[in-house]
Figure 1 (tube, helix red, strand yellow):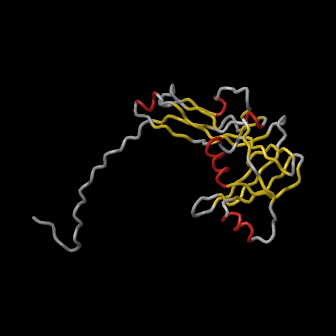
Figure 2: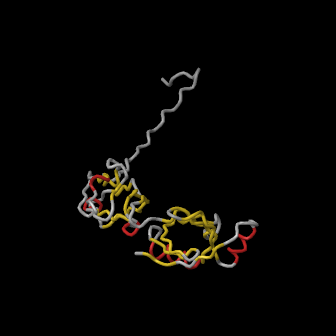
Length: 204
């Protein structure tokens, strides 16, 4: 699914213009990629944040740049260290008929049989690299762990095939395992022997 986002061309000099845009509630950015020259733009911070919140970073964003319709994906975002506000965004113009690679979040779903028995769910992989045409890119990949018991594990190779995308990540990568419950060993304090005093005769 594609969503629309209004853009404005922006000047790149002086650098103080970036701070002015942010003060006006806009995010400076750039578009490059398929059939477009690198173009500096600005977008509404509120609108972009809403798209990210409602649709995720892998959704296709359609823009009108200099009278031309451009389909884009978000390639990279920069945020302020302190308030986490968006400070810059890079959009990648894409060909809707060609596959591209992105990262998709792994989401574990269900409560495993092993966890109900006291086992520990250990997730080792939190995202996958997937390849698909832009309109089929997933934001996340759900992994059902309901039937997993203690001692079971799932690798990328165990994931069911999906007709919309291809998983690029190494098939041998382990996603999740159900570990034995951790048992705390009881420690016993040993009574320390009294030190022998040199020169002291033992009691008769």
